[in-house]
Image 1 (cartoon, one colour):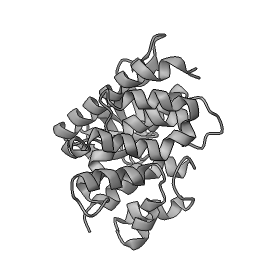
Image 2 (spheres, one colour):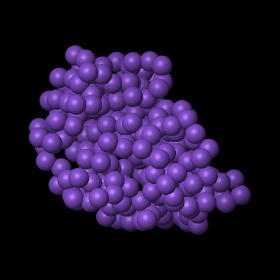
Image 3 (cartoon, one colour):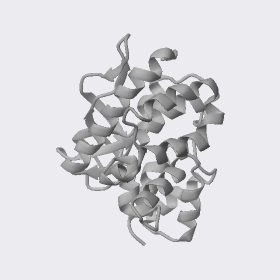
Image 4 (cartoon, helix red, strand yellow):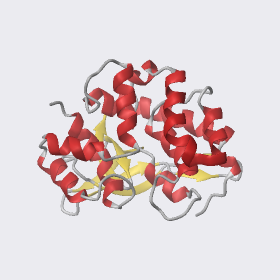
Length: 249
């Protein structure tokens, strides 16, 4: 089995630990990621993520990859890579229609408008254009908030300091904010994140983060892909969705 299941666990654990998505046994997911072990139990846990797992299946099928937890597929969903280009727009539209039209209600029109405008089956699309209309995060309220959108997206930053003793790193990171007209990035500011399951971090490393936890050390290709897909879906969100919804602090 490839490193894909462990990579999935790293990205999925932070919201799972908070009770926001996935199966209830977050301790098991943590134990797998900590031990670096993959077995059928980890695969069963991954299948319990009602949001992420269908996306992995869609991306894998479009690239004729048998295993949805193949490392390339997992990277495509959370970070972005060329596999996303293999998903045809009509197929992605049908996928979203089947799973989310009923939950979105009248809000489905906003999601539907974004599909032919450049939507990709990337986590940032789910955060910025699906979650606000479907309530897939168990937060107990219907409206999106900047805190949720910024925490749930996969963000990136450059390590400036690491303290192995505390399990924290400081990174320069740009938060998503509301400027009165739409979603945008704020200036780079120091941000403390838990090192999670990534060891040996040093100043200068680029990392991804999910809900304040480091998920992976990334290279320039991955950084560019994550920036590109996130920017695309921020643009679509501003054009067709979030400008019509209240944003809470």
